[in-house]
Amino acid sequence: MSNSPLPSPLGGPPKPTSPGGLIIREREPVNFESPFEQLDSFLTPNDLFYIRSHFQAPALDGNNYELRIDGAVETPLVLRYEELRKLPSETRVATLECAGNSRIFLVPQVEGAQWELGAVGTAEWTGVPLPRLLEKVGLSEDAVEIVFEGADRGKPKEKPTPPAEISYARSLRREKALAPEVLVAYQMNGRDLPPDHGYPVRLIVPGHYGMASVKWLTHIQAVRETFQGYWQTSDYAFWEERDGQPVRRPLSEILLKSQIAGPRMYEVVPASLPYTVFGAAWCGGADVAQVEVSTDGGENWTAAEFVDAPRRFAWRRWRMTWQVPSQPGRYQLMARATDIQSQQQPEKHDPNYGTYVIHHPLAIDVFVGL
Ligand SMILES: Nc1nc2c(c(=O)[nH]1)N[C@H]1C(S)=C(S)[C@@H](COP(=O)(O)O)O[C@H]1N2
Ligand SMILES: [Mo]
Image 1 (cartoon, rainbow, N blue to C red):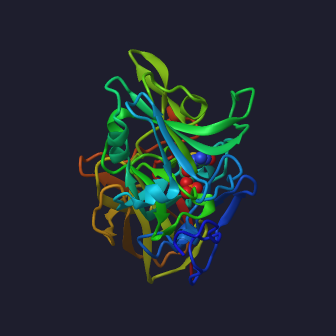
Image 2 (spheres, rainbow, N blue to C red; image 1 turned 90 degrees about the horizontal axis):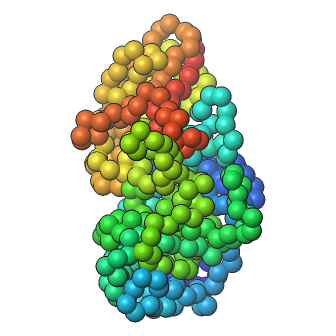
Image 3 (cartoon, rainbow, N blue to C red; image 1 turned 180 degrees about the vertical axis):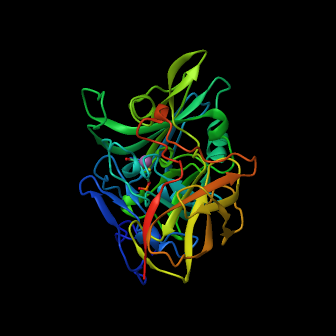
């Protein structure tokens, strides 16, 4: 059953589904976000995991699937689905966050998918570590990057746009491609990948924003020069200051962030009672060491308690008991994370990131009612 070439929309055999479903941000291509307030498990169930697709999902069949590995390598390789699944596999937990998550919080409003808090999720991914495959083909010493291409194609939306249809392709620096955490994955939370999440095979790049984890992966190509594709320069890129000049660089590591799952915006909370504020915090680099919560718009901060132990590349859920005041009115809640290197979330969004990397503390306004 797990080798079934035509999986159900959720992947694998039927199972009890979670209540809630997903929130539509764009109907076609499918861009659905997770109901972040339903953060009640460390792993996000497959049917509650956000979907971010630039083009229509290609209808791939495991029986005809092939993964080509070529370019700056000694022996190019073509792997069929069954061959890939027979190789020694590993299972890794990784939090994926879309670089555009929380875009709806930017003022004034900007273009792009209006993600709220739910373009993020955590799953257990199973597949073959990428370094093992690169070892098999013999990566050339002068290969500087590896390009990963998906089977989906179309005309992208973000300007400047290329004149013809393109595929979805992203590259990784040689060092990251050789890191043990990067997986060529075929399972998500113990089930074959659902079609919208990249069936039959996708890349999983723990620590990097979601755009690096190329779905419907059919081609891996080692290259001798920095890849300058559309999804590397035009979209999913930012301005980095280099010797006094802004230069265009691809987004990569997830930056430190904490989000409040409950209460929700404009929720009415009862006066004079304890209320459990809860959420999650994550980052792609150093572990999250502390989360603090403010209930007065950032004046005073109280440490939250962690629900999950630190785990590299995965979020940590947290909670904090708010002794709700007796005074009715409007209160502003914020959460702010600190990592083990004492780095804190910035107070404001950095315009060099454009409409991406929205990782400053996001204010949630609530009303205390009698
Ligand atoms: N082939 C392909 N891979 C892709 C994308 C895509 O549009 N096409 N979207 C990327 C982006 S922007 C994100 S955030 C993640 C989302 O993965 P998910 O849909 O499984 O949550 O997939 C990435 N991989
Ligand atoms: Mo994304």
